[in-house]
Amino acid sequence: MKQLVLEDGTVFVGEGFGSDCQTIGEVVFNTGMTGYQEVISDPSYCGQMITFTYPLVGNYGVNRDDFETVNPAALGVIVKEHCTFPSNFRNEETIDEFLQAKNIPGISGVDTRKLTKIIRKHGTMKAMITSADRSISDVLRELESTPLARDQVQQVSTVKPYVVPGRGERIVLMDFGMKHGILREFTKRHCHVTVVPYHTTAEEILRLKPDGVMLSNGPGDPKDVPEAIATIRKLIGQVPVFGICLGHQLIALASGADTSKMKFGHRGINQPVKDLETGRTYITSQNHGYAVNTHSLEQTDLRLTQVSLNDDSVEGVRHAQFPLFSVQYHPESSPGPEDTSHLFDEFITMINTEQKKTKEDSKCLSVQI
Ligand SMILES: NC(=O)CC[C@H](N)C(=O)O
Image 1 (tube, protein in one colour):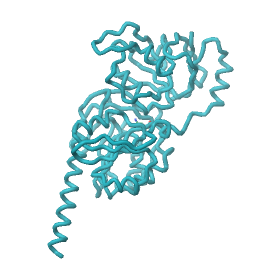
Image 2 (spheres, protein in one colour):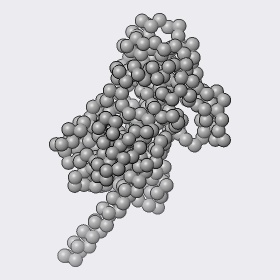
Image 3 (spheres, helix red, strand yellow):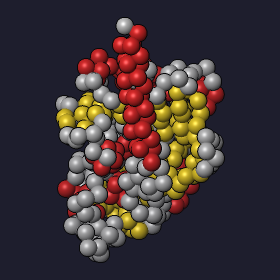
Image 4 (tube, helix red, strand yellow):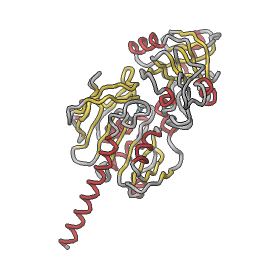
């Protein structure tokens, strides 16, 4: 038997599955009814344990296609029930086998809706999955003396740059813990993508002569990656930029706005977002625990373009002069609705418009000469 002990002393006893190891992390809840494979393998969960509000997890197994990264960075999985006989034509292994292979502990038999209500009330909490034999006071002492990691981006970003060739627009993708879905959206559109580590400087990026720079999602507090904020500050105005999730938060910080930690965040695949430019509402896929502070945008060149219909938090911004926009949610879905995948087309259109402008400017210049 295993136990999940929250830092406030709440204890849930259940059955262990997956890896047998002990883990300490931040518990966050995801409300998606499907997509557990993509969620568990999303690198933005680095340092966190995921609890699913949907009661049955693993019923279509784990397949070879739906990974968002090869080695998941989530620290634990908490479920009401995990399926041991998955049924699906793509099924390769059970969630239990998958978590064992990836050394991620799981606990089942937990009332995850009760757990979610506790988190909604108190906010996200530090917790431990450990053997049910350990005394609670002992576990609480260890929890208190173990700080949560703050170097998650460093843990999940690529160590070296690499290229995914294509004949289209040349994109430099800053990898803060990129989901494969983002890369997939660019390769689908025939782009030539150079993926670079999180600490790549603006000079190194501009030397690659990119047509556009994509800033990926990633784990942790955006303020923990000051080197990326400094890079982005230099890129703004030099090249078209598109940011997703952590990338969006870093753009805000680089522009002089501020971010803060939300009480329990947005994690799920049915989050409604209103586009203030068109008046349309989109259903989006989300996974974030930090948000850009709305009023902090006032003293910047960023304009608020999208808001969450659940809590009015910032979901999108656009630069007033330069070709740059970003969103807090995941237009690449994986998992979730594809309502906003057109944003990748908009980015490519933005790049092409900029290229045309530069060509016309150089023509004017040569006529004057
Ligand atoms: N998916 C993401 O990029 C998450 C961004 C950031 N780590 C947050 O939790 O808000």
